[in-house]
Image 1: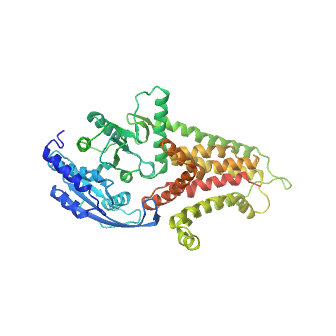
Image 2: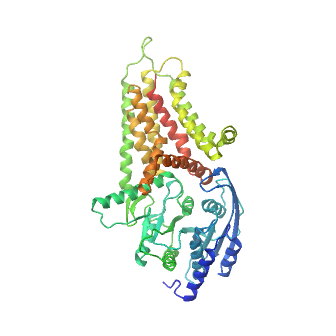
Image 3: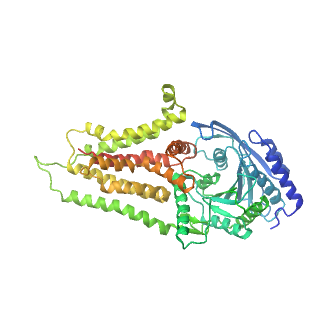
Length: 549
């Protein structure tokens, strides 16, 4: 491949990188428009505005205003019905200027080629995911998140694939492939295979989850390394958040991934020209596609870039956990059928009210957990010395903790005491409810469903009113959804080899809660409503069974 083999092109790229490394305030929109136009692209801009439901303290923003700049290289040898996208996020500072410079250099080189059969869109988006969300909604004429953006003046064909480029340093030692998208979606495995094949061909050091591939697979340390890499992927996928700009493309059935340049101070160095050759090779292959990527797997886990675990291997593990719930429900059904009918002086069958009341109150608590944190933030800020973000998080924790008092409040609404058959019927309902809920979750996001099953199935199978109350209550609290999230925070930090103290871990836990609520409001992540409206009420039903009178 002849990318940047001409010294003039190399000098032009060096100029671009030097200009982009200068400190800037905001994205240089006018300069980007002129530069793209000078390279023969059809250039358009899109302005957008988005007000967050509460301030994002991690990135210090509340009212977000920005502009996306994109240039279209029209296909000279095709009817322009399909397109490919190369994007680079650009915000204040010089965090990703190397990627923007490389994108512009590739645009100039691609313009001189005549073999392109698809439109190529070079996109520089501001404010990372918020800008990308606005551009994708404008491109597909949808508005699912309530953002305010100007309509796009120029469009290409139907987008077949996309890559997002992030270079965090002037010196790149390895390229990391990021696959996890919104709600745990993954691109077709062929896209990861394409990246790995070109890295091997060109001689670029490549990683996944920031971990290098090992050759000693048959040793204990090799298995441990692969397991840690795969567990990192499971935790990232279970979070439901997009881990790069590519994550929002997957919602529109566009195969996409993010490529991140990492400077880990290894002896191995990769220059910008080599990364350009890698991207050119990948886009040439994608340009030859006659149909969308679909031949390989969409459901997989990767212990390394050269190996994967398909759905046929990991789904039986979840199935074994789900079978426990079904067998326990069948056992309760048999017990209910074999119990003697009630007499005037003996126990009677449970009424509908005794079963329906805990179900309704548990789900009302879930609705409060879902709606009140954002709705009550202004009142909390007025009466307590906290910020809006702290008010949202602390309100969510307060409602979650208040649910522990539900058994007493539930029985106050009932006349008399519950029957023996009553808790069995309620548990039968809870078991079937949980089995269906976990099964549907695992089909959409296996990692999230599996983690929830590991914590909820044991208590759902063995909890009864006759177990020791104090010990059972402690175990239920330790295996509750909130504590499971806290454990995942510490495990994730350990797997990333950045362990944290208890205090720092607690602060990360609070940050994860606020980020989950923001991801749902901004991008449509389903993890927070799933936990608040379905998983937490189901856990409360089991909590009611433990304290059944």
